[in-house]
Image 1: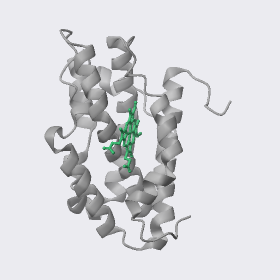
Image 2 (image 1 turned 180 degrees about the vertical axis):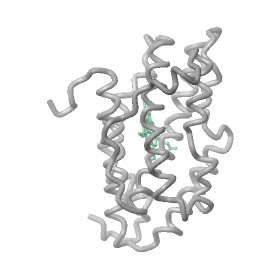
Image 3 (image 1 turned 45 degrees about the horizontal axis):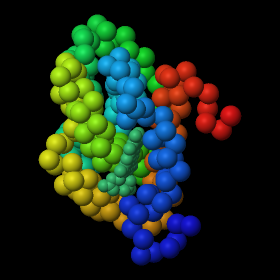
Image 4 (image 1 turned 30 degrees about the horizontal axis):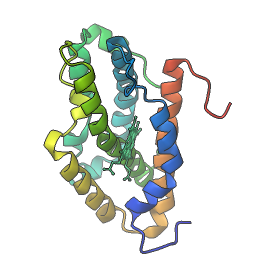
Length: 205
Ligand code: HEM
């Protein structure tokens, strides 16, 4: 399954995480016409509880590659903070937000790159969500949607840049299964955390 060169690592990642992406989409309820401002805020709070520990862990695992990956430009925690402050949060209430209990196991660089693939890829679907939020909350004081806006006009170029860095930093096909595992585990952790926050049962029950 991983040996079918000339597939690139990015294509392998996409193929091997397709069902994970579908499950992740299902726990994102932002496209609903019934979405309320507090529903949107709860979603951002859950994302904050995911990104805070995950970005910290990735910062450590990927420290040596930070410049090549442009990590400082990619972190989403400041954007989530901006959105949450616009919705009434302050330092004290942000510090009280719960963090996800089970981080995906990211033992080394290949797995961490897989996790970063998930966070970066989510900026693509995020553009669709952004368009919906802007329309849906037209005339409502809901902030600037900084998280979903992400890199603005540069979402496409930043994704391309990430794909190129991934190939440069992980050229060895034998490492692909570990990158894929990191991505799958991160999708699973995202889904489980969102379900926990929504109070849902696991999808396989
Ligand atoms: C309602 C929620 C979502 C929708 C509608 C959505 C939609 C999309 C779309 C349309 C793309 C392809 C964009 C393109 O090829 O230009 C995409 C890519 C991607 N999304 Fe999502 N997405 C959603 C949620 C998520 C979430 C929550 C995550 C991560 C936790 C995620 C991770 C990814 C990744 C990694 C890719 C890149 C796939 C690849 O080309 O390798 N998505 N999404």
